[in-house]
Length: 246
Image (cartoon, rainbow, N blue to C red; front, side, top):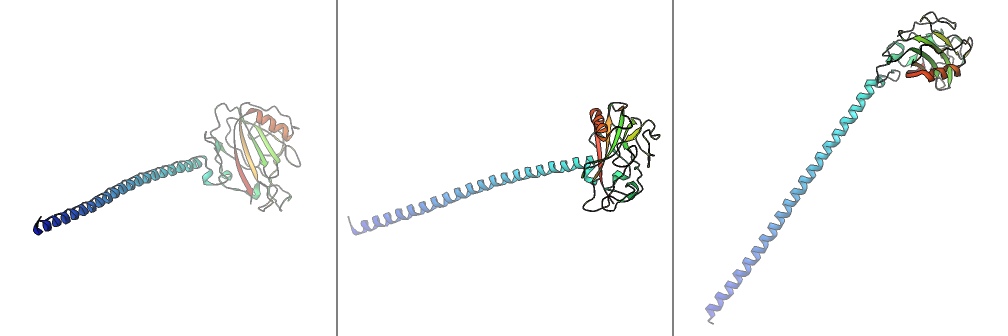
């Protein structure tokens, strides 16, 4: 082979080598591009996860619905507000607040210097459940487990109580009602909370029961345990308002 031919062969080989290297480089670029596209695909999957995150916002909406439930009971509006999902609930001024004024506290200081007029509060309610034949009211100190007072045989047609129910087993307003089981003194009279606002103050509940009997058939000497047992045996539904002394 002549020198010219060999030179041309070498040039051809060099050209082929250059072309091979170029193709290899393009292949790497193509692989990189393909990898980049896969990366974009992963990124899209990431966006999908982000949509799942939006689903998390949906859970937040459920939580908001829970808050709505709180409002429907009235609990969200104040610690003292009380009612039930059936619509049975208090509607008076006292139970719209959170504290018990001196007017409704006992006359003698016992715990924390509490002193008041010992007048039972004016209470009102609405929405007694179907089947209610009478109602009963209990004042109970939940902190010290003291049964202060009970009023029962309240006619089902009644939806409010006057302030200052007079002492005595038989009550004239509301007519037909009976009272008793006072914590101290005369058993057949209201006995209010006996503490002022302090760390030692009692926590008092006015509990209103809708009952399926017209009368509890209790006598004037019925104990707190007698009264509560009779109420529990006839209860359809109970609502409660909790307050602390001013």
